[in-house]
Amino acid sequence: MPIERFPHLEAKRDLREAVQALCGKFSVEYWEECDREHRFPQEFRDEFAAAGFSGVTIPEEYGGGGGTIGDMVAVLEEVAAGGGALNAASTVHIPQLCVPSLLKFGSEEQRKEFLPKIAAGELFVTFGVTEPDAGTDTTKISTRATRQGDNWIVNGTKVWNTGALQGDKIMLLARTSNPETGQRKGEGLTLFLTDLKADTIDIKAIPKIGRNAVASCEVFFRDHEISGADVVGEVGQGFYHLLHSLNGERLYIAAEVLGMGRWAIENAAQYADERVVFGRKIGMNQSVQHPLARGYLNLLAAGLVVNRAVEEYETKGGAAAGTLANASKYLASEAAFQAADDAMQVFGGYSYAREYHIGRFWTETRIQRIAPINNQMILNYISERSLGLPRSY
Ligand SMILES: Cc1cc2nc3c(=O)[nH]c(=O)nc-3n(C[C@H](O)[C@H](O)[C@H](O)COP(=O)(O)OP(=O)(O)OC[C@H]3O[C@@H](n4cnc5c(N)ncnc54)[C@H](O)[C@@H]3O)c2cc1C
Image (cartoon, rainbow, N blue to C red; front, side):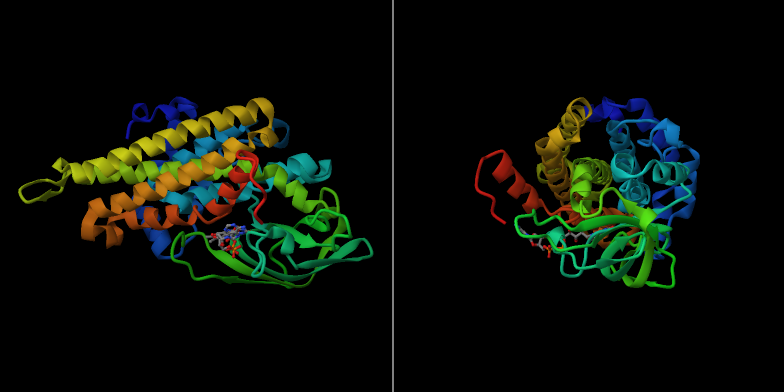
């Protein structure tokens, strides 16, 4: 669908068109095959890095493009809209998640060593926070890092670690002490950047219903040794270091679902204009047109909120953008899933045929209402911060 049809896309138009051109080299059939065969899209990752898009937000002094969060938001929306949906977007997105923490809390040695490799697409860092008994409530994690001389010994299990089969390193959140009386419940957690390929780590892919080109895994640490030099930031403050990057992540997710929603609406409208039933195009029925029109409007509105959130983030800083970043993630993920679901109806029985691809978009927009943060937690945030209601959890 031409950029003019979605006014929020005028922001960063040149960058968007460059990403669209690159994504155009990878057909929907390529992505369907990667998903069906559970094959990591290495060709895409290599080409993407070679074009210089892997380090968009990394400062130039560390080998990146020196861009803004708005640049990355534009890149991710176009990647997801290009037919690869989350298989494509996570390939780009996952290694970026450690960047804000490294930039703000990492040592200069860590920044110099890791950021240029991430920018060049040579280093794939995964994000290891969630555990079997600690998802939404991150402060309940029990993976334990125990100090031994200058090093740390880690034992525990992470789950849903996306990209672990390809990952070189994991940005790991582990418990290094229990909060003392009177301390905040997030105290005592520490961030580490450690190797994933080690004899002391076992990785097991979780069979999933979607995004199968990029595996999400259980990761078991058994007496895994980490050098003291691989602590990121302050010992005991890892949870609060991560909070620093959350609003940026909300915007990345919002952009990705917007891209997927656009793909769904665009392709459903095209199908509705071609498929003939009862001697006329199904798109002549208002009951087919209206859900698509509504989907377009919801995506348009969400896109404008994302642009406004980016503006707030860039002018006032990430912490100030909380309400708009949360609003972006909520509005975009709800709009995109509804758009994909309505598109399924338009495709009729063929929506279930993998050949028509819409099923991938339906499954993958669905997960973004749950992860990385579920939309109920966003409503909790808005209830508390915007409406002044008591904290409910
Ligand atoms: C495909 C996929 C990829 C992922 N990748 C990663 C990754 O790379 N790294 C990583 O660390 N994690 C990853 N995750 C984990 C993801 O962040 C968690 O699934 C998410 O945080 C939710 O945790 P949970 O599944 O344990 O849900 P739970 O915490 O068990 O919550 C279940 C449901 O309960 C409801 N709920 C919980 N608390 C409240 C409340 N206070 N108020 C209202 N409702 C509530 C919500 O509806 C929620 O969906 C991934 C997950 C998936 C599915």
